[in-house]
Structure formats: structure tokens, C-alpha cells
Amino acid sequence: MSQFIQLHILTSYAPSNLNRDDLGRPKTARMGGFDRLRVSSQSLKRNWRISEVFEESLAGHIGIRTKRFGQTVFNAMIKAGAKEKLAQKSAEAIANVFGKGKKDSLDIEQLAHLSPEEQDAALALAVLLAAEEREPTKEELDLLKADQTAVDIALFGRMLASSPRFNVEAACQVAHALSVHSVVVEDDYFTAVDDLNDGKEDAGSAHIGESGFAAALFYSNICINKTQLIENLNGDEALANKAIQALTEAAVKVSPKGKQNSFASRAYASFVLAEKGEQQPRSLSVAFLKPIQDEDQLQCAIAALTKQVESFDKVYGPCADTRYAINAVAGEGSFAELSDFVAQ
Image 1 (cartoon, rainbow, N blue to C red):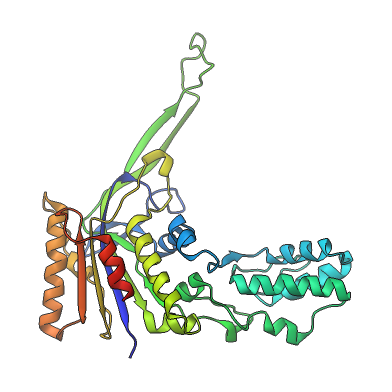
Image 2: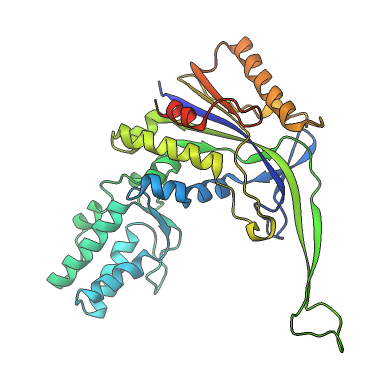
């Protein structure tokens, strides 16, 4: 049976536009018959993955997602002295290992997630091919994806449609963050003034626009299958523990980047409940099916979350072996202890 680590997080954001839809307005979702503010799991994962927290903690173990790796290989071969035609064909072959290539292009059709080891192996092969003035063999191409220890791939998975045997099952599941209360998205009407316009001939603004925004207290749910994570990292439990700690810190401290310069919408989590055990994971979002309307919204949300934990335990038996919580409103617990808890 796998060991699971679950994080239940409450984070409050002042008026902001963290994650926009196709019209530039804050994303929403309907739950319990009411509109809620939403931040997509894709947005959350990307912001965590490219954060300084991840980079500082996991340097050398973070992959890249790109369509353009073929151009990188081509440039490496040209720099190593290969002729352009050979570099073109070899770069296409190497890039196609990670995805179906576009016609008459070094790019592949879909984003591919490459680990540092895969990048290094591909570039080393490019230099070898340039030196030996030949194209890669099938065996050489197959070896490019034989080993990888990129933490972000291990956590969030990888799908290579052209080479399914090199797919990686995600060890981490991230829910869309939803407000615990109903929301109405408001519009910010704004103007910009031309500094060189003295107003003598034209007193109007140089630009007029509007932007949607809303404030919300979000509930976020993260589930990590530690057993799967260690397997994805080729048995490296120490690296898996570092990954779990880095992910926890990012989830608690890193905010989505949407409209940051306009709203300065940076926030730390106000409440975090971490759970560990081999029990089947479950979200606690049902605690907020009825929107929180209390004036003391955060305290009421914490109480609803805690009550739902107790109710699940009464009905199903203990849903976790151990738990640890931090409450930044009451000043209870410490992040350092939380970080140790999730990695023990």
C-alpha cells in the first residue's frame, strides 16, 4: 500500500486577478450552487515548478518543458563543426524522440518535459555525431530516455504520445483552488495619462481600460503518493524528501503571477493541515459546499475544515495515521516543524 501525504491549505488573497480566463477575467467555478473564485491546478503547478523555492532546493534536478529542443541540438552540432544538412537531420531525429516533429521544422508539435539527464545525453550525442560525421542509430536514440531524475517530472508526470513506454505516472495530484465563499467578480475601470500632454488642447486620457478582480479565501488540496515518487526517482528517498519539502514550501508561500504588478497579490497560507498515512486520500472541499458567510471568515473556515476531518474519522475510521497543523492566525505551530513532518 502506498504512503500518502495530503495538504489542506487556506490562503487569503486581497482583491486580485491571479489566474485569468480567455477574456482576461478571474477564473471561476460553480460549487454548491454558488460562483466561486478559482485558480487552476495548471497555474499552481507551473508557478511552484518555476519558483525560486524549487530552484534553490532542487537545483540540478528540475527539467524543462519545451517544443524547441531540436534547435538547441542543431546549434550544438553546428558549434561542434557538423555540416548544416547533417545537423538538421540529426537534430530532427533527436527531437522526435520526445515528440512528433512539425513538418519542415526542428520544433515538435507538443510541449515535452525533459530531465537534466536527458538534455545532457542528447547534447553529448550531438557532439559525438558531429565528430563522427554521422546520424544517430535507433539504439542511441532509445538510450536518451533510459534514465531521468527530474523532480518536477516525478511529481507532476509526463506523457510522451510518441513514446508511451517513457511516460511517467504523476506522484502528486493538485486540485483547483476554490474560494470557500461565493464571489462576484468586479470590474476595475482605469485610465492612463500621457505625461507630455499639458491638457491645453486635449484633456482626455491616453488610455482607457478595465480589468476584472475579486478577493477570496481559497481552499487548496494536494495529495502526494510518496511511494510512487520514490519509484519515479529511481529509489532516491532522500531526493524524494527534498522534493516534498520544496513542494510544501512552494504551496504555502508562492503565489500565482497573474496581474502581480497591478495588485501586489502575494500571500502566505493562513492555515495548513498536513496528513500522512496509507488510507485512501480524500479532499475536504465538502466542508465548503455551503459557502462561508460569517464575518470572521477565516476562523469559520478553519472550524469547518477541522469539523469535516472529525466527521470523516467518525464515519470511516481514522483517515490518516498522523497529522500536523499550522495556524498563522492564532500563531500556532511552525513551518519548520511542518516541513520536517511531511518529510519524515
